[in-house]
Image (cartoon, rainbow, N blue to C red; front, side, top):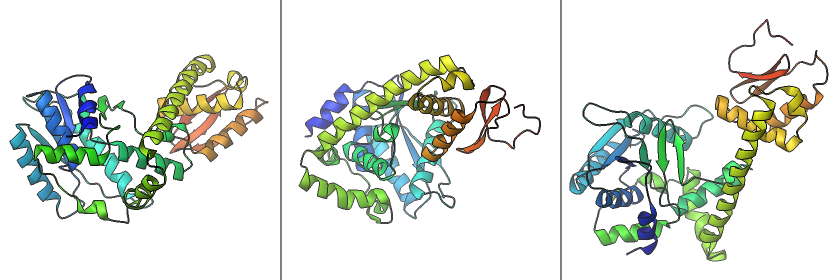
Length: 325
């Protein structure tokens, strides 16, 4: 019996009931579904996303239905097209499709009420993999903070109660419950970066640093706390510079605070994540904007930031021929 798993589930309090559980049929989501169904009988729904990416997807759905019948949990299935576009990774495309499917399944459907909370089976090893991927990309604090225990996306409360529980502990608990789970063959496919991390890096880290899961988790917590403080500072600075940001008040801030508030504005108001290079270029233009005729028009994210009068504006359509400078 896994004490870590039991402790994590005892501490888990969803934002509200009924509670959905993202259910792939794998070990992690099976354990989470079983534990939630036992704790909140009649208040749990399984959400299964059929990605259609491999021939076994139909078999996965059937096995999920069998487990749900055994647990007395209703199953809702949503089929998605998770094929990835050129330049996009299969993992990223599948992840986006999965969260879109969760949001769709959370809507009320006939006699089934709407759901506003979902629990996902991400565990401590997933969290370490996320951190290592962020480090490989040179990510800032948001990336180094990895996955949050609780977040809100598309109006849906997303809970990850198992982030402190190693994968081996979850499987140990599941074996004790004598519940079957699906071994997804794609998890052994070395073409996927996460699988290479799982197969090569994690065992090497365990040998070199036996306590790496706990110490890395502390670093993730520090990054998350620092990011929260930066978010609070950005909200205060945005109230000062205005929304959309006014250039003169923006220039009165330090460069670091300019970067922080502009990133916050672009993400909060436009869902736009500027690259480090784009943000650096924008900061240079803000610094150089000392005359009324200085023009700012830069590619940022999927759109553009331009100067209109004494303000910065973001848009994702062709620039207006009547833009006022």
